[in-house]
Image (cartoon, rainbow, N blue to C red; front, side, top):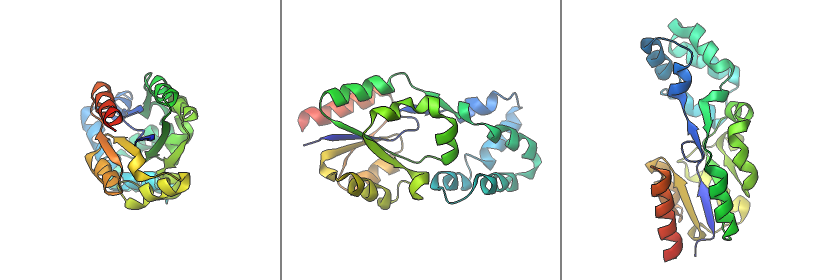
Length: 201
């Protein structure tokens, strides 16, 4: 019997809108591509979420990926508030599930910088019983440890949880730990898939 719904955060409960954010600076398309390759598309981006490097070390690493855009990288990462956009549906969705007796939690690859600077978009967290932010534990999805840590910390049974994430490999990792899983594509699709699991249970 499913008792808990566990959410990823980025592109599920908020938008990770880095493309729009970079474009808002008015850089050329060439510069935006260089920025993406030096930051969000680089292997170093995972280290942002893993929380093992300081902001200064990460910034230096991004610059080292492409020193030709040092000025632009520094401009972008001075304040990343607008890299995360608020989804108006998040709180009503969570409240609906809570009202029906389900626990609502999160497991998310998330950075300290985003947690601190994007608080307005994360107002739904107060509606949730708890969860795991990767930077705090220094482990990221799809590592089995992050799911195991979550279940242990909150005393939950995997078979009683359904996990919703926009990344297939993260959902598969949760399923290997015994959870049900849904890959989020759209809100309507995710809600439909969730209801099918909840009503069939």
